[in-house]
Length: 314
Image 1 (tube, rainbow, N blue to C red):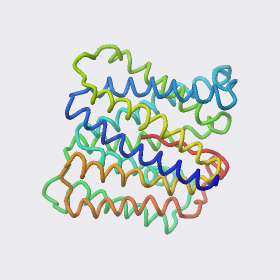
Image 2: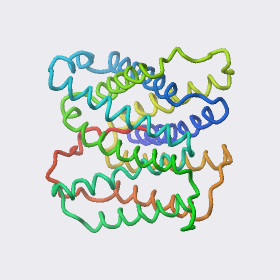
Image 3: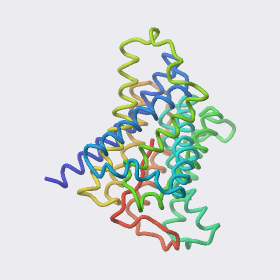
Image 4: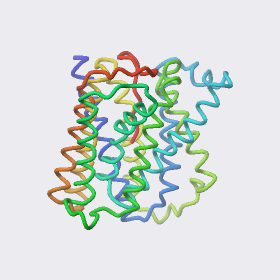
């Protein structure tokens, strides 16, 4: 029963993540919601809710305990600004200028970027799986962004730029979080990182600076979905699934996220998606599955063990 519950939780969370990006695109498209405001409100509310879950469900002393050591506090602030905020902003900007399907798939190039980074640092050796994943990523990106045409792009240039930056930010986010995760629960680290990022962006676009009267009930329902279901519940469900599933199993089942983003973008928002873009999507999802199923690489860096909780963000 616990295993079935874990599988249900991670699949539900992944679907929420995937659909959340598409719903955000609907808000940008139909209601002209500002990206800065969306990211600010999403981070502040979701971060507060995650810390609330930690307060009532786990070791509440960690919530303030993470700030008692100066080194850890500085590490957390950097993670919140250059990790969490960077990932969230670039991802949402890519959705605004393109669509959730392309933004999500480009963000999922982060593992390949990590492989390349570790190779340059000589902290890992190149394996057959690494070569295959890099090849699939390159082929997948080519078809996804060009739809098979060398002469023109099928996706707006700004969407590609923000999407690639999102992948780079996610790679940094993943690597930089490892020492923090070894000492504190994921809910504490991600919750505070979201609040830090939200507060920082508030100086650019305060969350109260929006014409709330212009938003319809439908718009508010979309906002609730993006913040509660597409962010807070999605992450919480993923973490809870790790109580009965291994990180590898959760990562594998979590690959449903880009598929959910693609399907909702195509069939709900009616965004055009060519044949070769589907081929590119299959390549990138194949890359994700190989990474999830493959054996651990011989890295010399501090990596998460099978018992530690990996971070997810979308």
